[in-house]
Image (cartoon, rainbow, N blue to C red; front, side, top):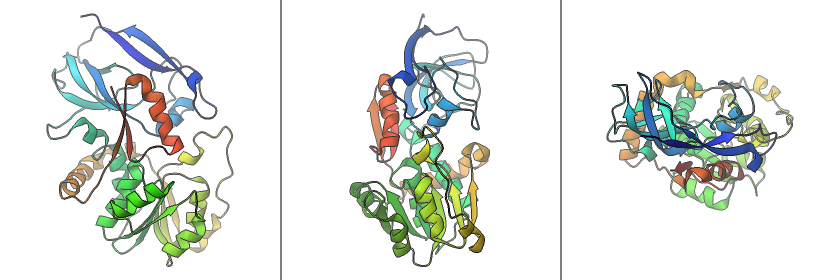
Amino acid sequence: MDRMNHRITLARRPTGTPDDDTYATDDVPVPELDDGQALVEVTWLSMDPTIRGWMAYDTYLPAIGIGEPIRSAGVGTIVESRNSRYPVGASVFGTVGWQQYAIAESGYRVLPEWMSPEQALGVYGITSVTAYVGLFDIGRVEPGETVLVSGAAGATGSVAGQIARIKGCRVVGIAGSDEKCAWITDELGFDAAINYKTEDVRRTIRRHCPSGVDVYFDNVGGDILEAAIANIAQRGRIVLCGAISSYNDAAPRPGPSNLPILISQRGRMEGFIIMDHMSRVMDAVTDLRRWNEEGEIVFRTDVVEGLDQAPTAFERLFTGANTGKVLVKL
């Protein structure tokens, strides 16, 4: 059967906020499969801030090539197969890209029957696994500690704060609206919330964390990172997960001016990439599934309909329009 693949590709590298000129669309024939390949009809796309870096420059992965589909994780259904690992009808997770069809060779994972596509990209997805690894392996969180989370109403931050609560920590979240602050305290069980748009973040952290911050889970960087450093406890740990506040900057902004505090406080600041910790996925999913089924983890998805709406959905990550995980449903 002749199939055409509708794609959203990278037209030019953005120097600031991606706009309409960043993207192009086309329709190309789906190639014949080689031995070992399978054809995936994409049904869901994951919107993640790291895509912004891939658009512009080499990171831990090469930059997306001009004319190539925007790189993105997602879920789809096998519709043709020349690989026994990927039977027709199976749901799979992988790096599918912003397109209607993708070719699976290796690195795709068949979803267990109990896991829905939304769960695979959401509560049991990479953002949740990132929260798990960041807290336990990088932050080395312990019961009774004070944990501060930025981007606390996002996909990663909301889960990080809930895991810290389950671990027996005092949890303070930073978010960008009163509604988001109410959500993380009233529904997710955070002990306190800070609206960074209306409050003095540095002073409010000190009020909510009078003994200092033992673990800061950073998703945003910038001024909020500097405010957290100012309030770090002795031997506190800063987990650098993301820096979304600066991803669309056209020029580099000054870094935190108060790093010497980490010397006097014997603090540690460490960045990590989840791809280096894939051996922990099953541990994370096992715990996340138990907590979710016990009602300990609340997760919210923000679903946008239609492949052509992917750029609009992606923009929601940077405007703060989303609460929870942004997904595109094809």
